[in-house]
Length: 158
Length: 158
Image 1 (tube, rainbow over the protein chains, first blue to last red):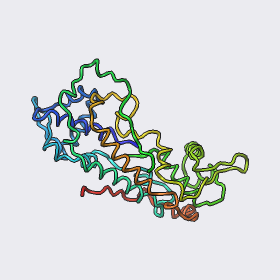
Image 2 (spheres, each protein chain N blue to C red; image 1 turned 90 degrees about the vertical axis):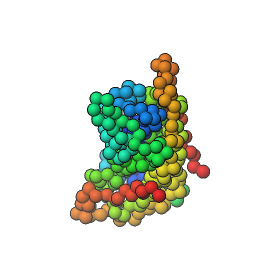
Image 3 (cartoon, each protein chain N blue to C red; image 1 turned 180 degrees about the horizontal axis):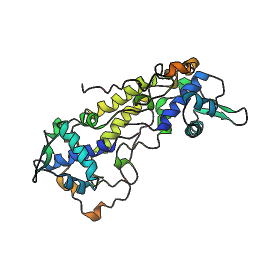
Image 4 (cartoon, chains in turn purple, green; image 1 turned 120 degrees about the vertical axis):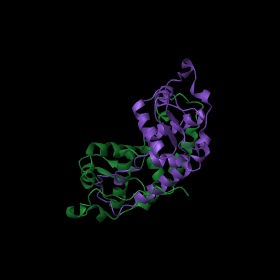
């Protein structure tokens, strides 16, 4: 199960913007900080501006910053804006050809699970995810944590 | 947000097996019924046998059927078995290079949301998804429901 890169990057941009306060950020600086694609970031920033999470200033000394305080940006709303669809299985997507569409009971169950997922994210704002600006400027040497990320703890059934 | 095709097909195989009762099913018949890839199905059936959801009988008149009653196959357990990882964002996956790994607060929030998703699926068994065998044999003409599947209802924030 995966979120799109769009959602991943959107949360990163908002976290970096929150840590940067009133400082205007640029696509270049943000791409360099996270070492991620400039083209992807451009798309993400456009979506975040269009949905009112970021405000953008055009021109040579332009950039972007949060459009409102971090505690008024709800994570669930960000994900609703950035996920192109929530097509967990084929029948939710265009081009669906599943033979039992219409009588199948999967969609309502999956909708319920999806909404439990989103409802959790609705309890968090960008303020809950805030880091210090210095967290984004770890010396290069210290960055080499290899390929180990945080552990996923999918709970065993209760 | 998507589940893998593996999970999608696994649920379909279990639903079809449940509707078929004691009748042995074959990969060929199941692939023909759903009009999906035989190779993918083979992989899915192997996983489901390995995890004790299906039992397989080898040989010319072999096939597969549910290994236990539909009401004792918990959907959450099936998804735990079939999703290769739950790497919602980059930092959960191998090859993670995100600079704020270690201090970032995203993983715990996403873990919580993921577990709310799985906990919902833990409340359902294959018995809740059961269809009649005849639901899988709709005359060809009636199958042309175009590309419209069920509606995804991602709830608005409460």
